[in-house]
Length: 379
Ligand SMILES: [Zn+2]
Ligand SMILES: [Zn+2]
Ligand SMILES: [Zn+2]
Ligand SMILES: [Zn+2]
Ligand SMILES: [Zn+2]
Ligand SMILES: [Zn+2]
Image 1: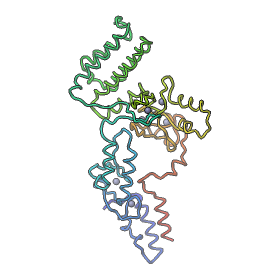
Image 2: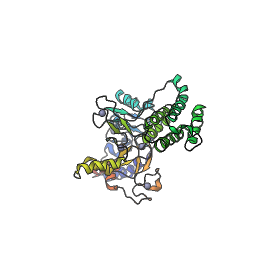
Image 3: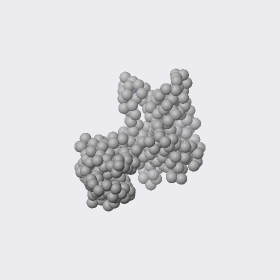
Image 4: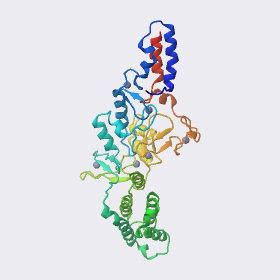
């Protein structure tokens, strides 16, 4: 039997007083009646009791809870199913016993390793991925050499090739050595990726302008991503790649539109996503009802993955469902409770507390509902 929990201790004195007020006792007066109820709805008798924490639920509530968590876990972080009352991690072998196979399949689909970030083309709805992970062992060992060759090829298309001692060429020489000697394992790949792409983009835009060598840097970026062996790090690298190259071409051959993976609108090479949306609003000269205006007002770029995320209501703490990064919506710094759930101490920005409170979190026992049921019973 589950140990007494805080809210059940809250209930017991109320039940005692009701028992003394009335001589006729009903099953609800008995504490053991409540101890056998589902911890979510309190209406049904328990059907299952979790192995580790001993919290208990009816099948209906537990299935509804798991389904809700699974269907909202389409982001790229691996979602763990936790007990809705005490938040202890429930193993997949346990929770999958109580839910339909379709939900388990959906969970496995959403949580398979090396998933790619995808967005639908704004013109034809074709799903376009940022980068596909291909794990090919034989190719893998040659990949570092391949990147080395790609950088050499990039440099050979530049007239600066002969001026070896000059900046930024010296930086690129360092990079070449890393890939040539395959000692990229010694550094963390995200840092190496950032350094390589920043250096190469700086080189092609400032030192060889007019040659449009950016597609070559783009190809190098994708190859560096494929050096990564760990799914979690690959996810981070993927977002790093998107932040350098947000614009992609639609893979539908009859469309070929270029669009932005960060905001989902048409490609905007010289503008930020916010500037692009503002431009669209200005061109349409539309009213306040415009969905783009609404989106612009309620969206920010996640500091973890650079994707524009939209939020309607809630406290300042935001957990990005794409990359898993927790941050303060007001000041965009990494989340700490010092920032304040409802009033960010950095910016002084206040979240709309009333609306956030109006919504009861799924799976958290609704104490006021339980108490209202109890008091109606007492009368
Ligand atoms: Zn229930
Ligand atoms: Zn629990
Ligand atoms: Zn398209
Ligand atoms: Zn954009
Ligand atoms: Zn994110
Ligand atoms: Zn803050």
